[in-house]
Length: 98
Image (cartoon, rainbow, N blue to C red; front, side, top):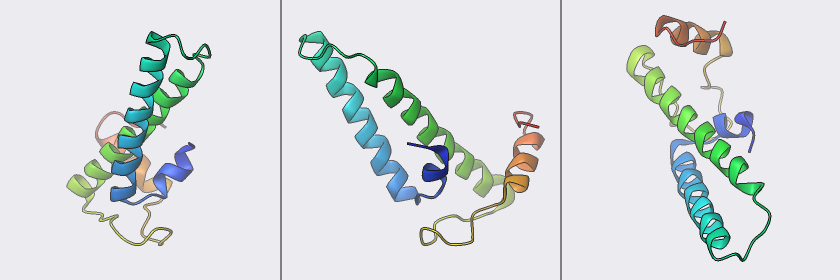
């Protein structure tokens, strides 16, 4: 899952995707423990997806808290903050990319 896809999701879609990814990670770990799967390459991908989803959720939480931007609108709407707004918010928090 790419970051652009994640940023295009609504809050409820993010929560659902997070639950699904965590369930998939659990199932993969269980299959490895029972030696039903030999390909371990999927686990890092699922972990990264979980991290991306959690990062997007936290970013939205911070945007709502500090800037007051509501993103719970229809998917694909123009309410998505620009990358410049994101950078400026994250820069003010001392964690931003420049």
